[in-house]
Image 1 (tube, one colour):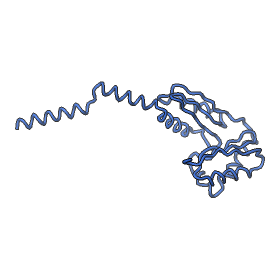
Image 2: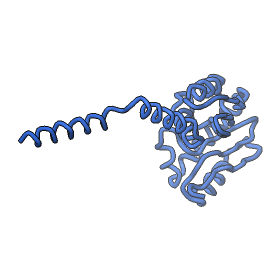
Image 3: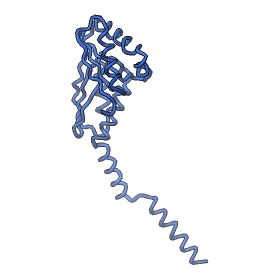
Image 4: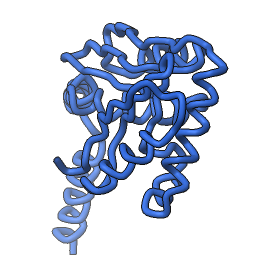
Length: 187
């Protein structure tokens, strides 16, 4: 019986030691976490998440980025200056990011471009085959209008969706050109 008590005590002591991390183990875990948070994959996921979550980000804006180690370059075009500064600020706060180069362009305000944006939105998202994209919080087909020139940015599921969006964008009056930069998911 005494041997059983000693064995149980030794077993519970061993379990307790394995549960309570030593200072060296704590430092090792912190170093692993820090290394993971400065990895390009972690930074890429976090930047993408933070940009999509911006409240001012919409279908008429295009936010893109490039990660080079712990440096992030923000790219794209936005209709509101506050979105450019908000994007830079949220990315600066991501753990592991050491430098942010904010190269986001602010599109010039224009009532003509605003009219084209709305007409493009109706032309693209009223098409029954593309309607499913409009149901998302931030529709994946972004319509960038700069002085009458339209650029489609984003990701679609099929090549036919890409071609149809381009075709529909070309039907809007007052548009000088349409550039289709849509990417097909998985390609």
